[in-house]
Structure formats: structure tokens, C-alpha cells
Length: 168
Image 1 (cartoon, rainbow, N blue to C red):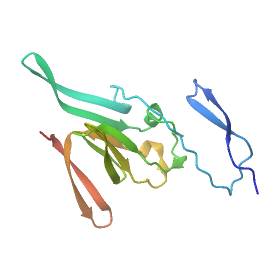
Image 2 (cartoon, one colour):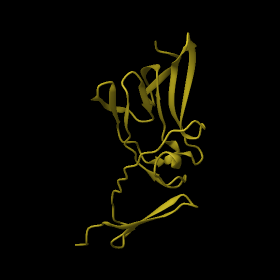
Image 3 (cartoon, rainbow, N blue to C red):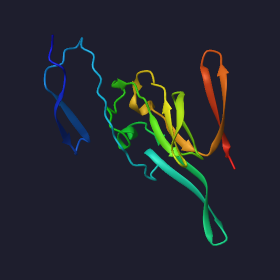
Image 4 (cartoon, one colour):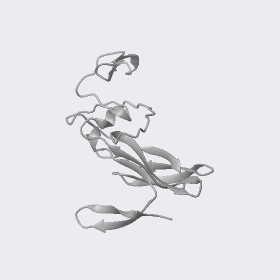
């Protein structure tokens, strides 16, 4: 019986934007293992990776936010800016997204919602089902106040249609 696999150290290369996970023993091609990484990325307003967008309307002396969008734009290498990954088309993995978001907003991904729970007053935690194996640039996420409707499409399964108009 082989020694269990463990991480002995992690090194990084900021120029190449990579980390290397060093193991306590050699891994063999026929072995299966799971690497679980917890990571917190930042959303920024450059429309690359995970980005935020607001539509602000002036109401009297106050600025009121009518439209809030947090969305992913991963192609070709944007995924690495918001989560730790192998950001190359031939490197594939499964993903299980968990999104903590304001309860007044909807959250969408390219995987079905497994369940949504109340995380704290005014906040929900939405857990998505595991995706099939895919390159990281195909992971999609959006948090917004758009309404949606689910329909079943023969040959495709469940399809979510998202309205362009805002919920009020």
C-alpha cells in the first residue's frame, strides 16, 4: 500500500502567474486524487475575468443603484484573475461553485443550482451542482437582478432564459 499523498510545500512564480504544488511522494498515472483549493478572488471593473458593473441613477441628491452585475468573462485567460486554476484549454477539471450573495440578487452559472440556503440576514449561499470536466475558461458566473425562466429543451435539458429587463 502506498503512502497517502500530501502537500509538502507550495512555491509560486509571480512572473508566470503560477503556483507549483509539491507532493510528499511521486504520483503515478493510474492514480486518482482530488486537489481542493479554497481561494478568494476580487472582482474589478475592467470587464476581464470576474468583473462588476453598476448602472447608477441620480434621484434627488442620492445616487441609487438600479442595476448590479457581477459576471465572468474568462476567455482566453481571464479565469486566473478570479480563481486559482490551470487556465489552458487542454487542462480540464470539474467545478463546484458556492456563491455567497445578497438575497435580493439572482445567481447563475453553467451548472444547475443544487440548493440555496440563508447564510445570514440579507445574504444567501447558492451551491451549484458539480460541472462536467471542462477547461476553466468555460466556467461562467453571474450575480444580478435579472429575472429568469427555466424551460426544458429536448436534446439540451434544462435551459435558463435570463431577461434583459430588470426586476423591480
